[in-house]
Image (cartoon, rainbow, N blue to C red; front, side):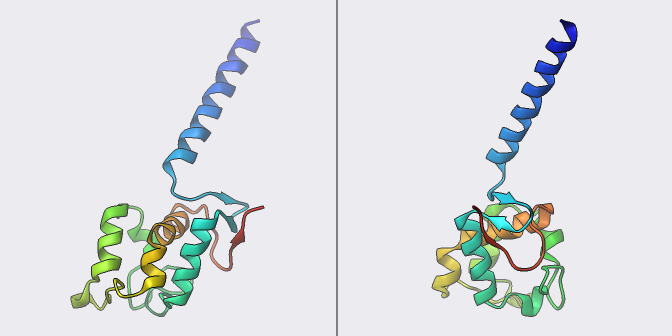
Length: 129
């Protein structure tokens, strides 16, 4: 009886943790390379804006900083400010004139946050089933 009770408690805690994680992450991912529609649109905005020229094809940095590291501490609002206004003194252009980027800013954040969290693998991604 006690074992069944403990198993039920563990299952309930695991389910609660999974639900909390799903609610706090801005992305959904399956198998490391299948993502929700918004995150996929963000990845496409990343590709179309050619962000890899500075941040590298795997977001690990080149001329620009590693976004894998930056997104560990950079919150959504600060991320949006940097992308929108740029950091021209550091070589980061503003993208407020890019409709592709601005229309998919939340998805772009979700994609990069997923990469930073290690939930989304580098490389090509596709729509979840």
